[in-house]
Image (tube, rainbow, N blue to C red; front, side):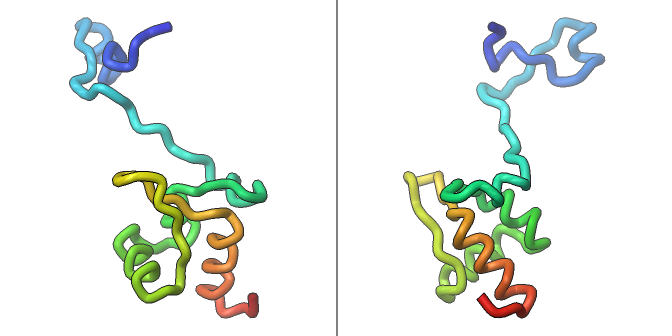
Length: 95
């Protein structure tokens, strides 16, 4: 298995033998994870689904419109149930 720090940055960089400067690569989360009961969504995924920015989602948390779960200093997640309820409130449909 190839180490993460040895992943080429682009096809041209791969031809020249260059590798990425980053230690880790970010892995995206599929948007259909919201259909899995109890799944933990990244704020980035909820932003894609709602069409809002991550900063707007943090403001919704501060107002109490969105319930999040802190898993560490840099890890904020939303359960799929809370994400669906938030999206329904955005759409104006009753919960």
